[in-house]
Amino acid sequence: MGELEFEYSEEWYDREYHKNKLGVTPDLKVKETQLGHVQRDLECLKKLELKETDDVLVAGCGGGNNLFQIKENWPRVKRVTSYDFSKLSVDFCAGLFPEFRIIKADAKSLPFPNLSFDKITMMDITEHLPHDIYLLSLWETYRLLRPGGRMVILPGMTDRPEHINLLRLSDIKKDLEEIGFQNIFLEYIWIVMEKTT
Image (cartoon, rainbow, N blue to C red; front, side, top):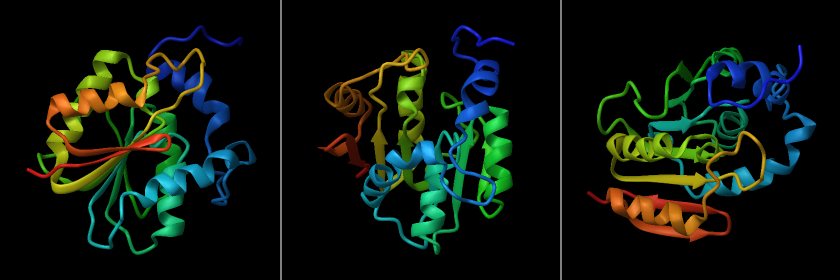
């Protein structure tokens, strides 16, 4: 079967995106095609200042790259939850990381109680979301992040058919300020923010 024309749907991501792009092999090695992101992602994750007692949410588990980084570099951080709307991605990551909670969910309406997480990552996800869902996902992170919590956003910037919401860091910062996030810092190619109230 040929490549499907892009559409924002679980079917497209399962059949076209994740079928060859899952980023971690079953023996927990990062795929060679993902090696360019390893150092970048690690530097971004360091900005979270992860602690053993943190409840962590990884938005969009995708191919497991960020889960792999947390497992390898912060082995004492065990209370990690991740979600994706792609069943293929969720099944893949749940099989690789049984110590973490991996669920199928939609970024615009997450099934967690208010103030559930100390740290949240949104790495390489915002560019995949239609703009209205992107804005709803930011509101969801605000609802879920505890006071004193920290979040990082690393938006993808490459021009691809599935990257339907390419945004400048300054635009994301403005959206975050309108929602109520404080202490927002633009660093390199990512944004770090805290929720103070």
